[in-house]
Length: 172
Ligand SMILES: [Zn+2]
Ligand SMILES: [Zn+2]
Image: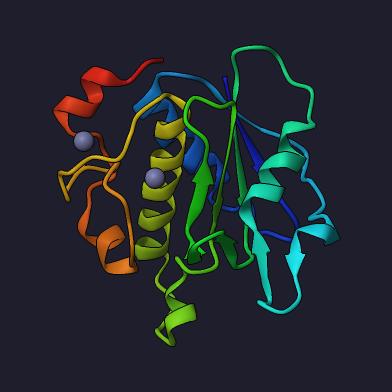
């Protein structure tokens, strides 16, 4: 089972579609959990950003059936030590991962909102972070969803699927 966890104030309109697309990639059912409040302590005042690792810590407190995965989805600007920002974060083989919609939204870049582009980015980052929870490392193939996105251009360039090599390594 893959649980989708809304964190903080977030529109859930695309959650059902995302659930179906993730089921397709990972062959696991998806279920939407009750939203989790964004805890105040994950906010770093001098950066005006939220620490992804601390959100993962908060998610890890949730008691859920053994063997499941949890994808937290938030809409705030995330960072991780050593990086100016991250689209999401996961620890290799862990239960939990998180993605943020903040920098995936065309509006963030002063562009017109485009649901299709926005959703395709969300799907890629969701598959990518969940891929890490299933023990996939970053892939050198720039088209593969497991390729590291250093920028939005990287995200837009890659596909929302695993390359054949990664598919073969996927440890479901
Ligand atoms: Zn990654
Ligand atoms: Zn790959």
